[in-house]
Length: 240
Image 1 (cartoon, rainbow, N blue to C red):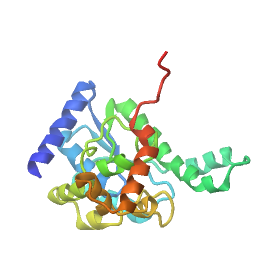
Image 2: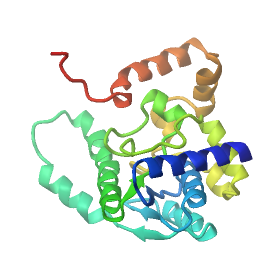
Image 3: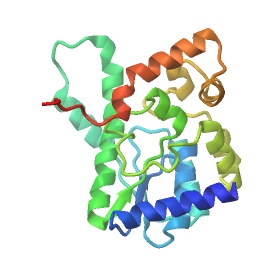
């Protein structure tokens, strides 16, 4: 784990230097992935780092956990509360003869897209890179919001399965309560990653790492990967 953490810290430094930037900014959500990113970024840029807390009708426990990470690792933070902005945007765009079944996901996806815009504001002002928190497991099946949490300049955890991120978190002395908490994107009350995906991270990681899975899991993961291929590619352009 020490070798992995050192390599990731060095890689972050190289990416920022190569972009002629000064440091890093990222969203600190109180979850496992953002906590690991926070500690790696702190090691890479002790003095030019900013964690942004962006509650948007969020569970207060998540904000408490985010604050815990910031205090434990001496990471400077700024809090941008998005509740009223989110509500105003929904009010402005509500209405229309749309399929009611699409409403929850469409409204939920506004939250990470507002957060992405906020992070890039700070990145522009400070000449920092935006560091994303997506891991290999989520990227493989497209478990992210396009131009939301998937919108970032670099993804240090992008080649690490969720199980590997947990191992790294333990090595980095991230509190057990954060490592063991139920993964959730916080999109709506009671929402969980595994509930929304319809499979566990353990099942997903096993299939991605070894190809071993039940027929049902294999079909589900392969279908999710196909449906989300556009999230892992640049927008297509005509070949003429």
